[in-house]
Image 1 (spheres, one colour):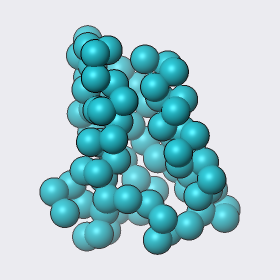
Image 2 (cartoon, one colour):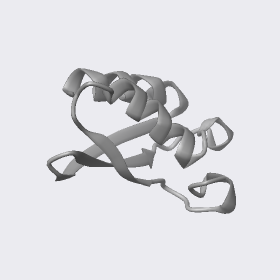
Image 3 (cartoon, one colour):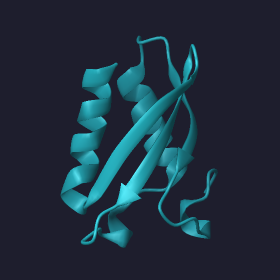
Image 4 (cartoon, helix red, strand yellow):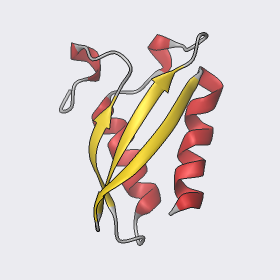
Length: 81
């Protein structure tokens, strides 16, 4: 699982974002995206897209994404948009 999350971190890093995660249940992890000083706001995909990407990377690991937290919550990044 760590390798897949490191891959996701690598996808976010060029746009100035950092990724943290925590396991909230045996089969669930929550993701937290933090913005660096030079973060590209327009580059960050909506939360549901990031969750889909993460779930794809984690397929076969026995875990899925529960909640995704972004540095700024707005309509563009709301789950389901």
